[in-house]
Image (cartoon, rainbow, N blue to C red):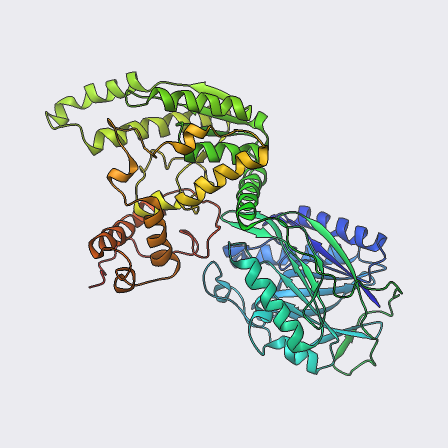
Length: 557
């Protein structure tokens, strides 16, 4: 019998001392629970993903020094810890350190380096080539890192052939709406293929656009889940697995004799993930906003409250992320703001218990128009005047941010940002774009979820019922310029997330409408490139996932 502890922690990129302290704390907690091995996520020492910090050799050396310091604290237990390694030829590796008796006993270097979506590991790392297994008290096991177990027939199968009777996979796998299902299905398949236990540990926390949802798990050789980590938060998962001690093989690195326990494992116990898909999206957004603020040392935030659905949802998310006492809503009405949206903005703030400021922009707008009248001439009111209002509001929010040191949360969705229905230096002004990967239709679903969870109307029903409008001219509605959001969101899913062609999309939609939407997505890349980062929740988000050139003449015929 072997007791495994999965330390599902939330490190911060570059915080070597803080990450080390957290790892040492969880080593101690696992030791108190009589665990034989405690396992930490991929690159836990330096944080994930370190990106171009890895080009700084002193950063890599410092992360190794930090690993050596924490190794001294690992006594009476073995630990598997992710870190960045470097060899004598200065080649970098995504590596796992195996530690026991206060010493580094072995290193596994990641073989399969992902280079798709948000992953860019071939930019930094060299593939490892060691087919190595380790022995703890005669228990032989293999260590793999994230992608190693996703690739059919990869190193994990060679480790089993070399005598491993259980496998450890350390991972930093980012969340998206489909990831948990894929991850669980893959690990069940691998456990059955290898006919062995798989102990999988994942990161939990937010890092810029990425959110890591935890969900660490242990599976038995039949693919059944024995233990499951809490979603979207730190956790220490303890499980006993009934693996038999084997004779030491010549290929195994011997760690220590170890002490083992006679506690019966909960064989076959299925432990399900918590919450619906919509609830998991909400948790991901809250965690992403919380960690972006906390890790970048923002205590409070500002939101432009328009009385519309997007800003209402962002305000609710902010309250759950950093507390109502740290959120300020700023209403900035103009001549086009209706009495309904003005009262809804104030009512939302009251319902959420956040601070509220109203700063009318009409006099500022008039001053701009007066100064520009000679240049503008007699041309009719148009897009320039509409966007000027948004830019006044953006300037006000950023000025208040400078005065108070607050983080401005923008309120654009994937639907508007995708087609450029947003104003550069206006409503796109801010530090973090919480919902910029959330389709508009999902925004409405999340708003209803907020009220359902609260058991009362936090987001006024009138906000949910009102047709969306930017209120930058008389009687304006979003649908004057855009297709209905259910149609638009489906087109964006096909074009952005699934790379579908015009011909494919036109099978179910009007061809001219499809061409219009594709053209809007393509020509607004320059806007998205200048927008703030936001939480990735879909399989393909604008940002790390989306790397199209701004100057781009390709158009599908």
